[in-house]
Image (cartoon, rainbow, N blue to C red; front, top):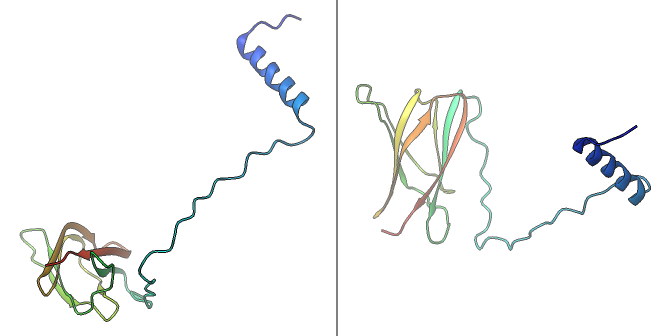
Length: 141
């Protein structure tokens, strides 16, 4: 029998190489893990929120330089659709967290203010089932 097809030759070559070089199973090299140092700020544990609701927006407002939570920041959420003006207003708690529960379906503009600091984000989609999480970093004012 003559074997001249390139794929057949390749297959036979691999089969011979595996049979000659191993006595059982072939193992790959262990994965390479990259370790990093812990962040400079402590971890903030956020208590449970948004239970028993259809949809929820949850945000964490942080100082952009220090990554510390900013309590009592004013949060404004306004629909971007011109005809149906929906507005939600809330304030962050002591952990810098805010929630807006069961917002109507649509795209919103989110604005957060704390003293002379300000941050805005447009195109925030809300109203679908589940929780939307939005981190907000306020730069120095």
